[in-house]
Length: 633
Image (cartoon, rainbow, N blue to C red; front, side, top):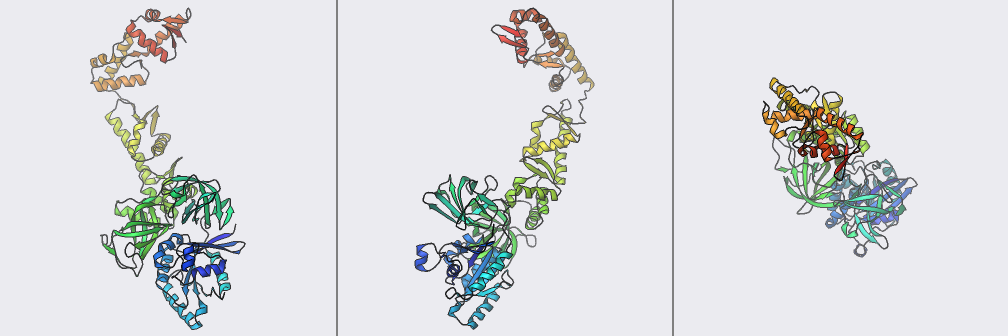
C-alpha cells in the first residue's frame, strides 16, 4: 500500500488555493455551481495526486472567506501537511493570519509556504512577501518550512513544489492504522442506486466492506456496503486516506457533517472535555465560563469554557492572550472525541478564532478535588503510557476497567494491556479486563476483610455473610471486581466460601455456656420427638436464650445437617428421618406403592405430620405421587 498523506490548503480568499490544487492534480475542487459561477470556494473540495507508486497525496481545498472558516475547520482536522498559501500581489492578509493560527493550534506537524500569483509581480515584491511570511510564522512549525514561489497560470515553480511536496510528505509520520476506527464525517450525500454515502479523512484504524459501524452521537448502527479511497473502489480503507463509505441500514437524513463513524460499542460521545487550552496572543482577555464555539473533528458545537488551574490559590476570572492552562469545555450537544484530539475555539460574537487545545479527558467530571485533578491531567498530557494508566488506576478505588481507558484514549485493547503491565498494575479480571493499583488493591481487600470481621463480631452465631451482599462494599464497581477480590482472598487462605456464605478463615462459631445448653436442648428435644415434632415457633421460646440467638442456633443446626427442615413450621432430627427411610425400604420389599393410610401406620403419625412428610419425600425424589398413593423410588 502506498503511503497516504492528507495535504490541506490554507490562506486568504482569492490567493489561488483552488487554482493551485487544480494545477497540481488536474481537478477543480470547487464542486458547486455557485462556487464556479462566483469564483470563490464556499465549501471543502477534494482532489488527489499520486506522486509515485508509494506516495499518494489527498488534497483538501478550503474556503478562504472569513464567513466560511467553519467549513475550513470541518476538513482541517485530518490534515498531515499544510500548504499556507500567500498571494504575491497581496501578501499576508487577515485570513492568512487566522488560518495560520488554526494550523498551529491543530498541531499540524509539517507545512510548506507557497507564494502564488508570481506572474503578477516582480522578484523584489516576492522577496518582500517572503519577509512578511517569515515574520508571521516565526517560532512556529512553519519557521523552518520550505518556501516555494509558483504561478498556477504559467506553471512556474510547480515542479519545485511537487519535489518539495514529495520530500515533506515522506517525512510525515503515518497515521495510526492499529488504533480504533474513526471517521469524522465532512460530507453526506445520496448516490443513485446506492443510497447514503459519507466522506471524511480516516483518522485512525481501518474499515472494510461489510463491517458494522456506529454513528456517533446517536448510536445508530449501519453496515458498509461500499468503500472508496481517493476515488478508487476498495475492499478496505486505512488511516490517512480520504474515504467514502456507502452505508446501508441508516437513512441519509439521519446523517450529518460533524458526526463520526466508529467501532460499535467502544467509544461514547461526551458533553464535558478536559483539555490543555491556549489563548492566541492577539486575542482579548477571555472570561471564565465564556460562551464559545468549539470545532472538534468536523463538528461545530456551542459551549462554555471554564478554567481549571488556580493562580495564587484561586481560579482566575479571565485569561490573557498567549496564556496556556488546563480548562474544561462543557458542550451544549455531545461530540465524539478521545485524548490527543485537537480542537479550535472561536468567540460566539463576533465570530473569530481565539484559541485551541488538546483533548486530555472526555467525559470529564464537573466537580472534583483540585490536587487529584491536576495529577491526572498532567499524566494525561504526558507521553508515558504507563504513568497515565497508573495515575488513572491510583484514582479508581474500585478498579480501572480497560473499556474506561479505551474511551479516554482510543487505544486498542492490546495497547491498554501493554501499558497496564508496564505500570505494574494487578489484573483482577480478564473478561472484562480490570486492573488495580497496589495501594487501591490493598484498600479494597482490607474493606472486605474488615467488613467480615465486623459481621462476625456482631453475629457470632452465624457461619458467614451471604456472598451476594459483598457487592455493596464497592458501590458502582463492576461485579467482576469484587468477585475477583473474593477469589484472591480465598486463594491465599484468608477467606472461606461455603455455598453462598463467606467467612474469615479464622472464624469459628463459639458458643457460650448458655448457648451450648440451648443447642443441646434443641437437639435432644427433636431427637426425642421422633416424627411428631413440635412446631418451631412454639418450641424456640422455651429455650433459655433470646429469640434471635435461638433462631441462629436453629439455623446452624440446619446448615450442619443435624436437623432437617421439611416445611416452614416442621423441623426433624436427622436420625428420625433416617429411621423413616429404613422403614420405607423395608415396606418396598413387599409393595412398590404406599397409600397415605399405610404411611401413617408405617411412620406412626397422624395426617398432620404424614402429608408434610410425604411432600418432603416427593421433593427429595424418594417417592412420586400416583393418584392417592406414592410410588416408592
